[in-house]
Length: 416
Image (cartoon, rainbow, N blue to C red; front, side, top):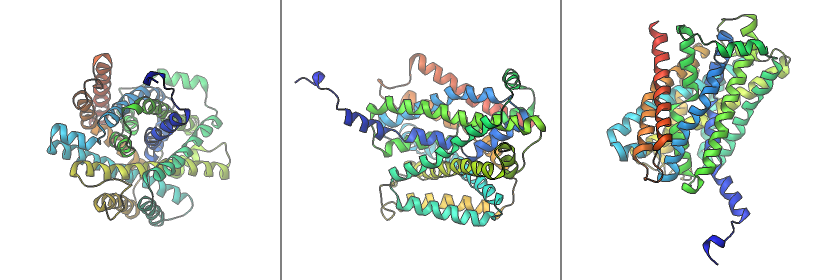
């Protein structure tokens, strides 16, 4: 019987789909992390619905960026840092890795700050929250395979969907929402600061490294491209729906009753997002959503840092390896968690301002991250899969406009 006459086996096709699903969904759930939720809440509280349109505009941007990541991973079978090293040299690879580590440390501090804020809702000191959180994560990662960690991360991330319920219960004003979509005060430096924060909250440097490394870890090939792209589309839409839901909930509550008032604590955000649910249910819903957002992102970010350094340095870097076989991988992963947890536990800082500031830092790093990503998609791929033609021009424009506007918004807000 000829090859063309052989029918695909349904069981094998389903297995192929299930094997490919995971990295794209996880990275998008992690994208809506604690810092992103705080940023979205601050945006709604201070500017009502006037940053809502930006959330929709960032959906195709997010897809284009992560689609290049998917393409590079599945076609080359190599991680982002490894490809930079092979294509542009060791010095450029370490330069890119240094920006990754900066973004990862900032992200971990943001995630742990969110969790510290959750603990403070119940009178738990930050150091106790960090002790339990960091200890639990280290134990989980040292004793689980990648697939187990992936399932745990998805379970945590799914908790973010409770914010959709919160937004519906907040009963947003339709007329005010439409009016907010039409007005974007780009001449206001405070507005631009939150524009930069929202861009940095959606297009994060570590996302590129993680999804590429995770797909390589699963040992998938070009045949999984279609499935991985579809998963990335779904993830991009879901993460922005969650961001929009938090923004709408904040805009419908504090943005209406006390407009332009900044949020200074995680407790204020909790009180803002759950006024119609009752204290007990509302607090439980907020804690569930914030914990899910912070935990999935912390898992992703810690793995990304260890994978990224390993790709440049060349050490063994798989969760399939025993800690004795990959001591540098597990050591760096643990060090990142302990360092971030220690910084959060020992410093009394404004957790809201810190989280928004981390997202602005992400926006400032975009030219480096997206520049390397686009260059690799144009240079490191075989001709058949290379980024070119009309889509290549669109992707280039997306990278240029996103990185440029992110930096412009951040710098303009600083010097206004």
